[in-house]
Amino acid sequence: MTSTQGSRIVVTGATGNVGTSVVRLLSEDPEVGSVLGLARRVPEWSPPKTEWAAVDLASAQTDLVKVFDGATAVVHLAWAFQPTHDPAVTWRTNVLGSIRVFEAVAEAKVPTLVHASSVGAYSPGSKDHPVDESWPTHGWPDAAYCREKAYLERTLDAFERTHPGVRVVRMRPAFLFKRQSASEQRRIFGGRFLPGPLARPELLPFLPDIPGLRVQALHTDDAAEAYRLAIGSDVRGAFNLAADPPVDAKLLSEMFHARPVRLPRTAARSAVAAAWGLHLLPASPHLFDAVLRLPLMDSTRARTELRWSPRHTATEVLEEFLDGLRRGEGADTAPLRGRKAS
Image (cartoon, rainbow, N blue to C red; front, side, top):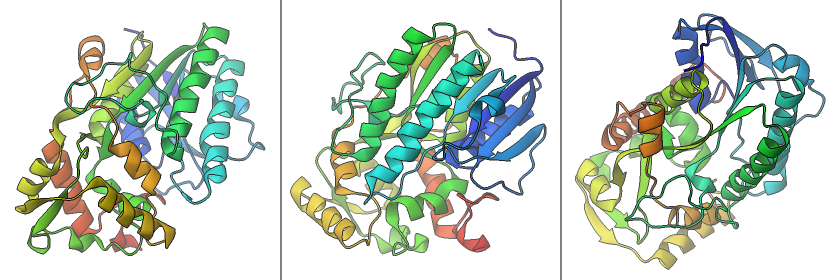
């Protein structure tokens, strides 16, 4: 293990779903000296040992080398999911912004880079036989999110060859949820026309059972713990992060006490495409296509090399998230602000 005593950790995207969990865990870690959280809007939230800086990665005006100077590690979490109708905008923030982060890490001689990749980087795979980190990461090219995550995997391949002195860790988590992210994720994926209180069992007597709709979930705090462990270790490379059991129509129908009804993939996609085309739904039909093809992941490497294991089952994660959705929960940062605070 690498000692992080007195270390200075910089976290991009520090006010979002993952960032708030990572910052909290690092601020509570006695081995960490200080945390610098980067976000477009500085929050009122003040965890111990934490300072904030207003940084927009989409802008080339920020001197990231100066920001990263003296850092022990940079944890790169910043990501823009919208606008889904204008992928050039998300490309500018997610891809070009990330490349600026990588280049600044090298120029500032930061020894460790921990990057938030995703299950979305993986090429289509099995829903029955989990894949390990050697599975191809070419994404689903029609979906901007997957295309951008896959492109950054290739970028990091080249970065590691050019900068062998930087220890690069790539986290590939499943879909991440927590109570405090409920309002943000409703806005990102469901839009303003999807009221959170509708996510009640008594209002959903039927649930669509769509072929291929079998995915994995993970509590955001559990993912954050993997980030913390990676910072304090000597590991390199990719780590799958997921909790059991896989989430499918059977599990969801049991949670909602609803009856699963088989719905053809083409019918479901047409409905999503129509809502997206009318700007009623932020989540694109291209992302829907990708979700139906994502492989299940094997997290053995994280469990053995990081000695990581999730504290929450996928069922517990969804139960907590849905309760937060119904209550309009959020947190004291601009991205996570809930209905109660708006």
